[in-house]
Amino acid sequence: MSVRIRLTRLGRRNRPFYRIGAFDNRTRRDGEMIEQLGHYDPLNKNEAEQVRLNEERIRYWLSVGAKPSETVASFLRKAKIEIPRKSRRKPAGKKG
Image (cartoon, rainbow, N blue to C red; front, side, top):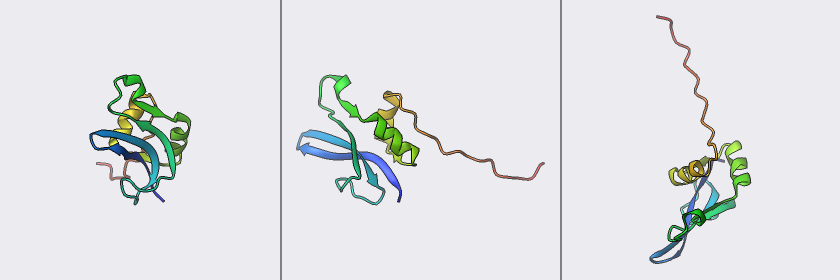
């Protein structure tokens, strides 16, 4: 099962609120999440309180291979949580 860390939208019209969660890759945007990992309130005036993350659980999901969405990856970079990169092997080629 491929897991993504992404947002799901809550709130009402003109008042968005998002939960950050671990989802199966095939789940629709507002579908059932495996685990809630935090929340994002874009209309909160205090920038320090806009994003709340459960860093311990996020690190766990990243360690088992979960991939964050672009938006969540930007939140993780701001929180100084390192996103593991896939190791790229150089293809065995001909010398020449």
